[in-house]
Image 1 (tube, rainbow, N blue to C red):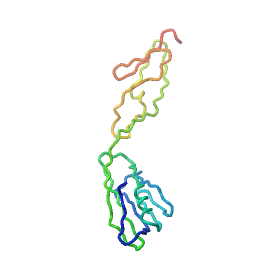
Image 2: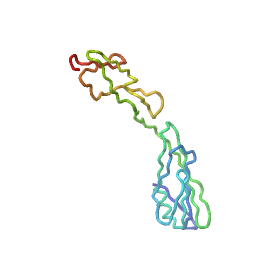
Image 3: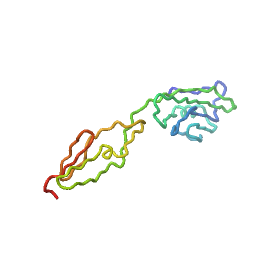
Image 4: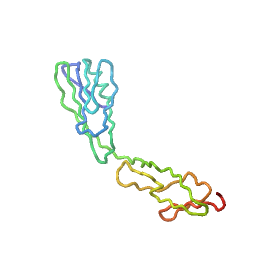
Length: 173
């Protein structure tokens, strides 16, 4: 919030435009809107309302940016321009924001298994069956491992190189 607005010959402003020049899907400009000013837009926000410079400066200092994706190594250019009550436009101020990627957790759907087997018969469950439709929002094939299995009823569970095998306990039919 070190941003300031100055104008040598006018204390009144009538508008301010804040724009993401190279927006990605989901990018949003946030702000706290003071009285007497209205706003429209998400990545190109036009604030309008005739009021004093201090009110617009407070608005400017409240502006924040939330990227819609954590695309690695990408940047967004955000520009700001104000217009005074004499219809004079300021120079365009520009800020470059570098997006730091985060590791998003993988997701698994369809991984609820209900498998049964005959007494004293092993039942193989492949790793692919166990993890269901796994995906990683960061892209690429997910690098997954099984951390836990909720329960095995009346049997044992063991891992046999890439396959999970359940064995029923003899005499528990």
